[in-house]
Image 1 (cartoon, rainbow, N blue to C red):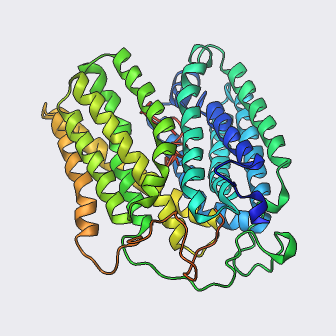
Image 2: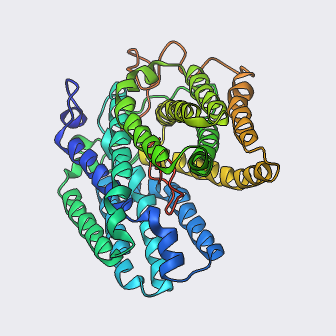
Length: 451
């Protein structure tokens, strides 16, 4: 059954093509409205900025931490049904914004519905996408998924910009209709790919008595090295300094038009480069990927600190490279190490991204405020550079065992007779994140959401 649905000869299957197209449409619709949420809540509904910040923080926490619940839910009801339920929640949430634009209570409730739907959908989406695919195919599938999410994130805000503030009810109605159509398409996906009974689930998910997440009773080889969960926390922690504060720093030193060009270039680089680099990233050992990824982020922060068009442009490109390498490699390594169903793995990865984003938000505001008060804002980027250098120094400085992935890249085929995790199924932002949807109402950084 897995062979029937796995991509063959480098081509995507029908369900995989649909999921990739759906990922683009979902983020296109989401980012037609979510980046403007703070403005709508504050200006149209009259909520104070403190209240708006609290509402968006809770929504972001729900979207990220809810991923931990998504794995067990998907294991209980199946991946396809989990995605359908998640899209039903998001459709209801966007539809509730239409009357909610006259009521703060309805609007906040609608936002929480949308966030809950995102928490459930993204892990199940990635798990279904790579279900039945060989481990060597995972980099290509996950990178294509990240590109689809990022393309939607890039196009959604400018497409909706002329309408969302003047006619928000029309925009929310169109988005709700788009999600309803995508949800109908998900209901038509093959059911065999939509079950996760787990390693001992009795084989209810597939003909022939095999579960979608069955491990074929093979022993799992524990791999030493840095924890993908911890590295994901630190990756997102460092990256979010850039996402949150580069606009505040760049526009006064260049122009709004130049910053808009940087955003478009950043999004284009993500969409194009991640699939092209996917197998190269998979071929890196985890330690090498950390050196490249965190090194690129450190160099990017240092370059931004110089200011000017060249420094900010080059620094943004380096930060993009760091995001591409770390976010994809973290997901691949987490999948390769864990015997858990893929939806649970991706749920934990989203929780890690949420922890990193929360920590960066708490620390970043204090750092930027102190640098601004001292009239030394470039020093903020020096601090970011130093923090980007610490994870590889700290985590790689103590070798407690063989490199996770040394001699064999995560995401590549295993030699015969070695232990293997399940060949089921990152993410926001996307988390991007990995490319997952970013938190709702974010401040217009280069890859808003997710992950």
